[in-house]
Image 1 (tube, rainbow, N blue to C red):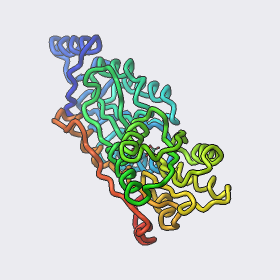
Image 2 (cartoon, rainbow, N blue to C red):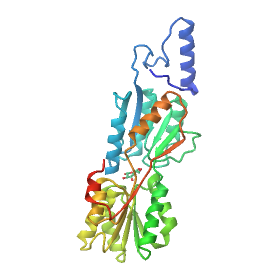
Image 3 (cartoon, protein in one colour):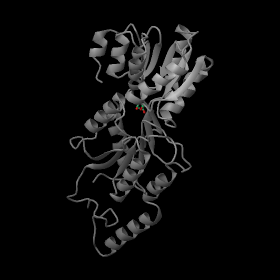
Image 4 (cartoon, protein in one colour):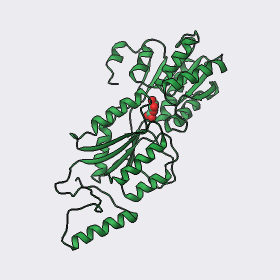
Length: 330
Ligand code: GZL
Protein backbone atom coordinates (compact mmCIF):
# COMPACT_ATOMS: atom_id res chain seq x y z
CA UNK A 1 0.00 0.00 0.00
CA UNK A 2 1.26 3.49 -0.75
CA UNK A 3 2.49 5.39 2.29
CA UNK A 4 -0.81 6.61 3.58
CA UNK A 5 -0.34 9.76 5.59
CA UNK A 6 -3.00 9.37 8.24
CA UNK A 7 -2.36 10.94 11.59
CA UNK A 8 -5.15 8.95 13.16
CA UNK A 9 -6.98 10.69 15.96
CA UNK A 10 -9.68 9.71 18.43
CA UNK A 11 -10.43 6.15 19.60
CA UNK A 12 -9.78 4.61 16.21
CA UNK A 13 -6.39 6.25 16.24
CA UNK A 14 -5.62 5.00 19.76
CA UNK A 15 -6.58 1.44 18.86
CA UNK A 16 -4.50 1.58 15.70
CA UNK A 17 -1.49 2.98 17.52
CA UNK A 18 -1.80 0.36 20.28
CA UNK A 19 -2.17 -2.43 17.70
CA UNK A 20 0.89 -1.35 15.79
CA UNK A 21 2.97 -1.00 18.98
CA UNK A 22 1.70 -4.40 20.25
CA UNK A 23 2.59 -6.09 16.99
CA UNK A 24 6.03 -4.50 17.00
CA UNK A 25 6.56 -5.61 20.65
CA UNK A 26 5.50 -9.16 19.76
CA UNK A 27 7.73 -9.22 16.74
CA UNK A 28 4.65 -9.05 14.53
CA UNK A 29 4.76 -6.56 11.78
CA UNK A 30 3.36 -5.33 8.53
CA UNK A 31 -0.13 -4.32 9.57
CA UNK A 32 -0.56 -0.62 9.19
CA UNK A 33 -4.18 -0.68 10.13
CA UNK A 34 -6.11 -1.44 13.30
CA UNK A 35 -6.48 -5.12 12.48
CA UNK A 36 -9.61 -4.40 10.58
CA UNK A 37 -8.77 -6.54 7.62
CA UNK A 38 -7.03 -3.65 5.87
CA UNK A 39 -4.12 -4.17 3.56
CA UNK A 40 -1.02 -5.71 5.13
CA UNK A 41 1.48 -3.57 3.34
CA UNK A 42 3.20 -6.70 2.05
CA UNK A 43 1.50 -8.58 -0.74
CA UNK A 44 -1.52 -6.35 -0.21
CA UNK A 45 -2.90 -4.20 -2.98
CA UNK A 46 -0.76 -1.27 -4.08
CA UNK A 47 -3.85 0.59 -5.24
CA UNK A 48 -5.08 3.73 -3.51
CA UNK A 49 -8.51 2.87 -2.09
CA UNK A 50 -10.88 5.77 -2.81
CA UNK A 51 -14.49 6.11 -1.70
CA UNK A 52 -16.31 8.57 -4.00
CA UNK A 53 -19.85 9.79 -3.24
CA UNK A 54 -21.27 11.36 -6.42
CA UNK A 55 -24.40 13.45 -5.76
CA UNK A 56 -26.46 12.06 -8.62
CA UNK A 57 -26.95 11.83 -12.41
CA UNK A 58 -29.23 14.86 -12.73
CA UNK A 59 -27.63 16.59 -15.70
CA UNK A 60 -25.38 16.29 -18.72
CA UNK A 61 -22.73 18.02 -16.65
CA UNK A 62 -22.90 15.35 -13.93
CA UNK A 63 -22.77 12.55 -16.47
CA UNK A 64 -19.64 14.02 -18.04
CA UNK A 65 -18.10 14.58 -14.61
CA UNK A 66 -18.80 10.98 -13.54
CA UNK A 67 -17.26 9.65 -16.76
CA UNK A 68 -14.17 11.76 -16.19
CA UNK A 69 -13.81 10.67 -12.55
CA UNK A 70 -14.24 6.97 -13.33
CA UNK A 71 -11.87 7.13 -16.31
CA UNK A 72 -9.15 8.76 -14.18
CA UNK A 73 -9.59 6.84 -10.93
CA UNK A 74 -9.10 3.48 -12.66
CA UNK A 75 -7.17 0.43 -11.51
CA UNK A 76 -4.73 0.95 -14.41
CA UNK A 77 -4.02 4.40 -12.96
CA UNK A 78 -3.43 2.96 -9.47
CA UNK A 79 -6.84 3.31 -7.82
CA UNK A 80 -9.36 0.96 -6.20
CA UNK A 81 -12.48 3.13 -6.63
CA UNK A 82 -15.74 2.60 -4.78
CA UNK A 83 -18.19 4.93 -6.56
CA UNK A 84 -21.69 5.53 -5.13
CA UNK A 85 -24.45 7.58 -6.85
CA UNK A 86 -26.68 9.32 -4.27
CA UNK A 87 -29.54 10.18 -6.67
CA UNK A 88 -29.46 13.80 -5.40
CA UNK A 89 -30.35 12.70 -1.83
CA UNK A 90 -28.15 13.96 0.99
CA UNK A 91 -29.08 11.00 3.21
CA UNK A 92 -27.68 8.66 0.59
CA UNK A 93 -24.43 10.59 0.51
CA UNK A 94 -24.12 10.54 4.31
CA UNK A 95 -24.68 6.76 4.33
CA UNK A 96 -22.04 6.29 1.63
CA UNK A 97 -19.55 8.43 3.56
CA UNK A 98 -20.11 6.36 6.69
CA UNK A 99 -19.66 3.17 4.69
CA UNK A 100 -16.34 4.47 3.38
CA UNK A 101 -15.18 5.08 6.97
CA UNK A 102 -16.24 1.54 7.93
CA UNK A 103 -14.31 0.22 4.93
CA UNK A 104 -11.29 2.25 6.06
CA UNK A 105 -10.58 3.61 2.57
CA UNK A 106 -7.43 5.63 2.03
CA UNK A 107 -9.16 8.78 0.74
CA UNK A 108 -12.79 9.96 0.71
CA UNK A 109 -13.97 12.23 -2.13
CA UNK A 110 -17.46 13.66 -2.55
CA UNK A 111 -19.51 16.33 -4.29
CA UNK A 112 -22.04 17.58 -1.69
CA UNK A 113 -25.54 17.97 -3.10
CA UNK A 114 -26.14 20.98 -0.81
CA UNK A 115 -23.80 23.05 1.33
CA UNK A 116 -25.16 22.33 4.83
CA UNK A 117 -26.05 19.25 6.93
CA UNK A 118 -22.59 17.62 6.91
CA UNK A 119 -21.24 18.54 10.37
CA UNK A 120 -21.83 15.17 12.09
CA UNK A 121 -20.47 12.96 9.32
CA UNK A 122 -17.54 15.26 8.58
CA UNK A 123 -16.55 15.08 12.26
CA UNK A 124 -16.83 11.28 12.14
CA UNK A 125 -14.55 11.21 9.08
CA UNK A 126 -12.10 13.59 10.75
CA UNK A 127 -12.03 11.38 13.86
CA UNK A 128 -11.25 8.38 11.62
CA UNK A 129 -8.18 10.14 10.18
CA UNK A 130 -9.26 9.51 6.56
CA UNK A 131 -8.45 12.59 4.42
CA UNK A 132 -11.30 14.23 2.46
CA UNK A 133 -11.01 15.65 -1.05
CA UNK A 134 -13.98 17.90 -1.82
CA UNK A 135 -15.12 17.75 -5.46
CA UNK A 136 -17.16 20.27 -7.46
CA UNK A 137 -19.63 21.67 -4.93
CA UNK A 138 -18.78 23.27 -1.61
CA UNK A 139 -19.71 22.74 2.04
CA UNK A 140 -20.69 25.14 4.83
CA UNK A 141 -19.78 23.38 8.09
CA UNK A 142 -18.77 24.07 11.70
CA UNK A 143 -16.17 21.28 11.56
CA UNK A 144 -12.66 22.75 11.70
CA UNK A 145 -10.54 22.05 8.62
CA UNK A 146 -12.89 19.30 7.30
CA UNK A 147 -11.14 18.62 3.97
CA UNK A 148 -7.60 18.61 2.65
CA UNK A 149 -8.39 20.19 -0.72
CA UNK A 150 -11.28 21.22 -3.01
CA UNK A 151 -11.39 21.13 -6.80
CA UNK A 152 -14.16 22.85 -8.74
CA UNK A 153 -15.32 25.89 -10.63
CA UNK A 154 -15.72 29.48 -9.46
CA UNK A 155 -19.52 29.50 -9.43
CA UNK A 156 -19.77 33.17 -8.43
CA UNK A 157 -17.57 34.17 -11.38
CA UNK A 158 -19.85 32.15 -13.68
CA UNK A 159 -22.84 34.17 -12.45
CA UNK A 160 -20.91 37.41 -12.83
CA UNK A 161 -19.87 36.54 -16.41
CA UNK A 162 -23.49 35.81 -17.31
CA UNK A 163 -24.61 39.09 -15.68
CA UNK A 164 -21.97 41.10 -17.51
CA UNK A 165 -23.14 39.72 -20.87
CA UNK A 166 -26.74 40.69 -20.00
CA UNK A 167 -25.70 44.20 -18.90
CA UNK A 168 -23.84 44.63 -22.20
CA UNK A 169 -26.34 43.00 -24.56
CA UNK A 170 -29.79 43.17 -22.92
CA UNK A 171 -29.82 46.06 -20.43
CA UNK A 172 -33.62 46.31 -20.56
CA UNK A 173 -34.32 42.57 -20.21
CA UNK A 174 -36.93 41.44 -17.70
CA UNK A 175 -35.27 38.33 -16.29
CA UNK A 176 -36.65 35.16 -14.74
CA UNK A 177 -33.92 33.29 -12.85
CA UNK A 178 -34.20 29.49 -13.12
CA UNK A 179 -32.14 28.25 -10.20
CA UNK A 180 -30.35 25.00 -9.50
CA UNK A 181 -30.80 22.82 -6.41
CA UNK A 182 -31.63 25.28 -3.61
CA UNK A 183 -28.85 25.48 -1.06
CA UNK A 184 -26.22 23.97 -3.36
CA UNK A 185 -22.96 25.89 -3.72
CA UNK A 186 -23.55 26.25 -7.46
CA UNK A 187 -27.00 27.78 -6.93
CA UNK A 188 -26.02 30.08 -4.07
CA UNK A 189 -22.92 31.48 -5.78
CA UNK A 190 -24.33 31.80 -9.31
CA UNK A 191 -27.31 33.68 -7.88
CA UNK A 192 -24.94 35.98 -5.97
CA UNK A 193 -22.63 36.68 -8.93
CA UNK A 194 -25.48 37.31 -11.38
CA UNK A 195 -27.50 39.39 -8.93
CA UNK A 196 -24.60 41.72 -8.12
CA UNK A 197 -24.49 42.75 -11.79
CA UNK A 198 -28.11 42.79 -12.97
CA UNK A 199 -30.18 42.03 -9.87
CA UNK A 200 -32.47 45.02 -10.55
CA UNK A 201 -33.58 43.36 -13.82
CA UNK A 202 -34.76 40.13 -12.14
CA UNK A 203 -38.59 39.89 -11.93
CA UNK A 204 -38.84 36.36 -10.49
CA UNK A 205 -36.94 33.22 -9.35
CA UNK A 206 -37.73 29.53 -8.95
CA UNK A 207 -35.73 26.30 -8.75
CA UNK A 208 -35.65 23.57 -11.38
CA UNK A 209 -33.26 21.44 -9.27
CA UNK A 210 -30.75 21.24 -12.16
CA UNK A 211 -32.97 18.81 -14.10
CA UNK A 212 -34.58 19.24 -17.55
CA UNK A 213 -38.03 18.06 -16.42
CA UNK A 214 -38.18 20.28 -13.33
CA UNK A 215 -36.80 23.20 -15.35
CA UNK A 216 -39.63 22.81 -17.87
CA UNK A 217 -42.24 22.69 -15.10
CA UNK A 218 -40.82 25.78 -13.40
CA UNK A 219 -40.83 27.78 -16.66
CA UNK A 220 -44.39 26.70 -17.53
CA UNK A 221 -45.46 28.31 -14.24
CA UNK A 222 -43.19 31.33 -14.74
CA UNK A 223 -44.66 32.08 -18.17
CA UNK A 224 -48.05 32.38 -16.49
CA UNK A 225 -46.77 34.40 -13.52
CA UNK A 226 -44.46 36.75 -15.46
CA UNK A 227 -46.02 37.35 -18.93
CA UNK A 228 -43.64 40.30 -19.52
CA UNK A 229 -40.54 38.08 -19.14
CA UNK A 230 -38.01 38.66 -21.94
CA UNK A 231 -35.10 36.54 -20.65
CA UNK A 232 -34.34 33.46 -18.58
CA UNK A 233 -31.05 33.06 -16.71
CA UNK A 234 -30.78 29.34 -16.07
CA UNK A 235 -28.18 27.88 -13.68
CA UNK A 236 -27.55 24.95 -16.03
CA UNK A 237 -28.14 23.84 -19.62
CA UNK A 238 -30.47 20.97 -18.73
CA UNK A 239 -33.03 23.28 -17.12
CA UNK A 240 -32.56 25.66 -20.06
CA UNK A 241 -33.44 22.87 -22.49
CA UNK A 242 -36.59 22.26 -20.45
CA UNK A 243 -37.27 26.00 -20.67
CA UNK A 244 -37.07 25.81 -24.47
CA UNK A 245 -39.78 23.12 -24.46
CA UNK A 246 -42.03 25.27 -22.25
CA UNK A 247 -41.45 28.44 -24.29
CA UNK A 248 -42.21 26.70 -27.60
CA UNK A 249 -45.32 25.05 -26.10
CA UNK A 250 -46.49 28.55 -25.19
CA UNK A 251 -46.14 29.60 -28.86
CA UNK A 252 -43.09 31.79 -28.27
CA UNK A 253 -39.63 31.68 -29.86
CA UNK A 254 -36.73 30.81 -27.51
CA UNK A 255 -33.66 32.97 -28.16
CA UNK A 256 -35.85 35.74 -29.60
CA UNK A 257 -39.14 36.36 -27.73
CA UNK A 258 -37.45 35.03 -24.61
CA UNK A 259 -33.66 35.02 -24.60
CA UNK A 260 -31.83 32.33 -22.61
CA UNK A 261 -28.51 32.74 -20.80
CA UNK A 262 -27.14 29.49 -19.40
CA UNK A 263 -24.26 27.86 -17.53
CA UNK A 264 -22.42 24.55 -18.13
CA UNK A 265 -21.59 24.34 -21.86
CA UNK A 266 -22.48 20.68 -22.34
CA UNK A 267 -22.94 19.64 -25.97
CA UNK A 268 -26.76 19.93 -25.94
CA UNK A 269 -26.49 23.42 -24.47
CA UNK A 270 -23.99 24.56 -27.09
CA UNK A 271 -26.14 22.98 -29.80
CA UNK A 272 -29.02 25.17 -28.57
CA UNK A 273 -26.65 28.12 -28.96
CA UNK A 274 -25.86 27.11 -32.58
CA UNK A 275 -29.63 26.72 -33.15
CA UNK A 276 -30.12 30.29 -31.80
CA UNK A 277 -32.38 29.06 -28.95
CA UNK A 278 -29.77 29.96 -26.32
CA UNK A 279 -28.10 33.37 -26.47
CA UNK A 280 -25.05 33.01 -24.21
CA UNK A 281 -23.48 30.07 -22.35
CA UNK A 282 -20.89 30.21 -19.57
CA UNK A 283 -18.86 27.01 -19.43
CA UNK A 284 -18.46 25.01 -16.23
CA UNK A 285 -15.94 22.35 -17.14
CA UNK A 286 -16.76 18.90 -15.64
CA UNK A 287 -13.77 17.08 -17.16
CA UNK A 288 -11.24 17.34 -14.36
CA UNK A 289 -10.80 13.69 -13.42
CA UNK A 290 -7.10 13.78 -14.28
CA UNK A 291 -6.49 16.73 -11.95
CA UNK A 292 -8.54 14.99 -9.24
CA UNK A 293 -6.48 11.80 -9.61
CA UNK A 294 -3.28 13.78 -9.19
CA UNK A 295 -4.60 15.48 -6.05
CA UNK A 296 -5.80 12.20 -4.51
CA UNK A 297 -2.44 10.56 -5.17
CA UNK A 298 -0.60 13.40 -3.47
CA UNK A 299 -3.02 13.35 -0.51
CA UNK A 300 -2.59 9.58 -0.15
CA UNK A 301 1.19 10.00 -0.24
CA UNK A 302 1.07 12.74 2.37
CA UNK A 303 2.35 15.38 -0.03
CA UNK A 304 1.30 19.02 0.26
CA UNK A 305 -1.58 20.06 -2.01
CA UNK A 306 -3.19 23.47 -2.62
CA UNK A 307 -6.31 24.15 -0.54
CA UNK A 308 -8.26 24.69 -3.73
CA UNK A 309 -7.91 24.09 -7.47
CA UNK A 310 -10.14 26.23 -9.68
CA UNK A 311 -11.18 24.58 -12.95
CA UNK A 312 -10.88 27.08 -15.81
CA UNK A 313 -14.12 28.06 -17.58
CA UNK A 314 -14.76 29.74 -20.95
CA UNK A 315 -17.90 31.44 -22.36
CA UNK A 316 -19.71 31.13 -25.70
CA UNK A 317 -22.10 33.34 -27.72
CA UNK A 318 -24.01 32.74 -30.95
CA UNK A 319 -20.86 33.09 -33.06
CA UNK A 320 -20.09 29.48 -32.09
CA UNK A 321 -20.09 27.10 -35.08
CA UNK A 322 -21.39 23.56 -35.54
CA UNK A 323 -17.78 22.45 -35.99
CA UNK A 324 -16.95 23.94 -32.57
CA UNK A 325 -19.78 21.96 -30.98
CA UNK A 326 -18.91 18.73 -32.79
CA UNK A 327 -15.32 19.02 -31.57
CA UNK A 328 -16.29 19.26 -27.90
CA UNK A 329 -15.29 16.39 -25.60
CA UNK A 330 -18.62 16.51 -23.72
C1 GZL B 1 -21.44 22.73 -11.23
C2 GZL B 1 -22.29 21.53 -10.89
C3 GZL B 1 -23.70 21.76 -11.31
C4 GZL B 1 -23.87 21.93 -12.81
C5 GZL B 1 -25.18 21.26 -13.04
O1 GZL B 1 -20.10 22.48 -10.93
O2 GZL B 1 -22.27 21.28 -9.49
O3 GZL B 1 -24.44 20.61 -10.95
O4 GZL B 1 -23.86 23.28 -13.22
C6 GZL B 1 -25.05 20.06 -12.14
O5 GZL B 1 -25.44 20.88 -14.37
O6 GZL B 1 -26.28 19.49 -11.88
